Amino acid sequence: MRIESIQTGQPRTLGRADAADPLDRTWTSAIWKEPVEGRLWTGTEGLSGDCQVNRKSHGGSERALLLYCAAHYPKWRAEWGSKDLGPGGFGENLTVSGLDETTVCVGDVFQVGELRLEVSGPREPCLNLIRRHRRGDLMDRMVATGWSGWYVRVRNEGWLEKGLLITLLDRPYPHWPIVRAAAVKRERATRREEAALLATCPALLADWRVRLAGAESTAATR
Image 1 (cartoon, rainbow, N blue to C red):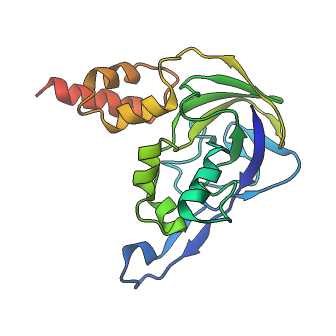
Image 2 (image 1 turned 120 degrees about the vertical axis):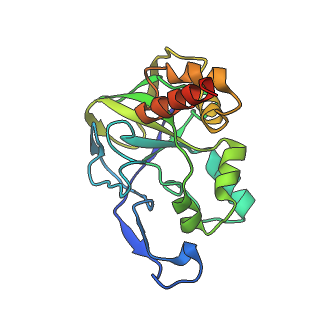
């Protein structure tokens, strides 16, 4: 398990305010993440030189870094018939090998060089991915495959660089792999018992816990 690539990005504005297609109207995002070389300082809010426009859904201490499995890229390239798609293509900060959504669990603690990272939850595919790649079915495909990526908190600040090994230190919630947590959140109306259980996981994203608990409360009053 190791870091294969590190990416940062700054906001870009595209589209036209008068465009007929909503996807072509003016929008601003930092979803374009480009590989960087050398050491990068990483604090509790993320990588030095990186930016997120929508701070409600990205960034902050709960979503300091977005990780994505390097092994997904050859599969996407084959599906799309594209040779250009590579690290950063899904807006991630760290492209990693040896880990994916089926093997990483909410609450996992990893040592990466000087850093200690804690998995906070799945990444939810957003409209900006469709806008960037011009693929209307992309969100559905990410849900179907489970290739969403996942967020981590930075518990120990430090320097990151490509090639660092990733070591699992602790796995307190082995029953909550990323792919299962994402499915329960998405299907919480019909998976109420699992949703209520997931809401009690202290390592899960705080806003997810609130929404999951709210869904259970709503169901209980019906």
